[in-house]
Length: 381
Figure (cartoon, helix red, strand yellow):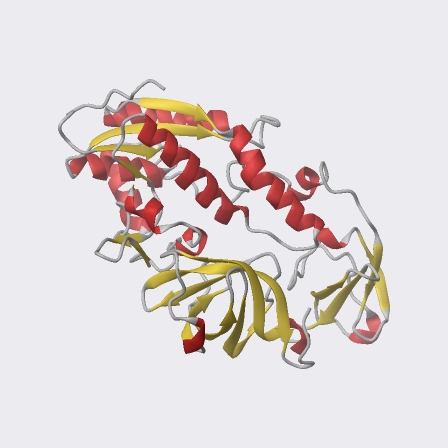
């Protein structure tokens, strides 16, 4: 592997993951201002298709090159398509086949952006990697810790909770104390063409596309009935894998005259009978849970915050990105699983998504949700 040529050889060397977006561009600029020797690296991680309007890798690379030229830094490219398929996308498909709703951004960060990219950057001679994530790192005798960003709306610790202290210790987050508005203002002052570029909302590294059409390439339909909890049939679903807990749109059942005009929501998936269970009204009791079970338990610091004998452990939690932190209690755990109780019932607790734990402003780690404990029936779904 040829070492990257970085200016100011005596300065600490940072390779920034330039995505073509405004956040990574401003991150690279700020690190240069702080005295680091900065270079950029663009990652291409999807090669199944580059159809116009779907995968934006070519356009993003052009934007990244424009940023590098404007900032006067070197830019290289690397292809992690094999790593992405093996470490992220296969797991993504497996979760859907298991009728859960995965969050690929979580695995993408731990396996690609902070593993494959970090290893590649260190091999090129970097001392650090830099990214445009909104999060903070605190370093001390106990190792690196992940902290909430200043901008609560943009904070990305939810997606970073599977990182390790060792990965964080090699990472710089120069946007930690900035808001998105401040980042865009910096980009405008620099004359960056991507200053107003919209944030990506597509699947990590795959781009924005018609999700159902994309997923249909790997998941076959398996139709079955849509029913109320009482067993009244309302219609037919495409396949349980295509739906998520709390979903309202795309059910195709419309109004039911006898039930009034209140909207319907997915409350459960009955895999044994291949039935999609729906309820009416956004606040229906079957949409709420008072706790959950989780697997693939991970602690950023490598160890739980308290020994098993000291449980229960009161902390804060988050079930989805941008959700306000909620009070919860870690009731039990072992090396890979945990049970959590909520101080107040939570809506649409979704298997396949993550429960992320916090203590104050520190992100401790998290787990993948496998089952929610229903308030009304005291059973799990």
